[in-house]
Length: 141
Image (cartoon, rainbow, N blue to C red; front, side, top):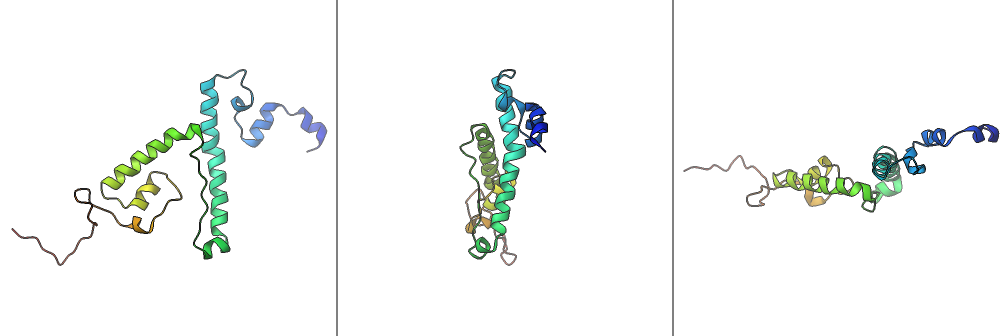
């Protein structure tokens, strides 16, 4: 695209090209709640998927794979995503509380990048004993 054609593009066209919501650029004709919702949507549909692709590419790299390392972005500083993090933590805690292994509970609740070696085993909520069924053991009254 040459410079003459670029000058004819409006802000709206440029925002559409880079998938940036217009309320993030023009604060004059949008309310604060619209801008906040636009930021949340922008992170959820553009930034986080892009970061996930970057993490996957780096994690698949031979140097990281041989060292058993992975890359994870920390979104805890993003104000608009903090309410989702609380909900994700609640869901993970509830799943873990009913015996779902921790790694599976984190994955199911959408919390990425945390896998613990001891998190592959589920625990029963009544005693936090490992959830292992022994077919040889019999219970009789």
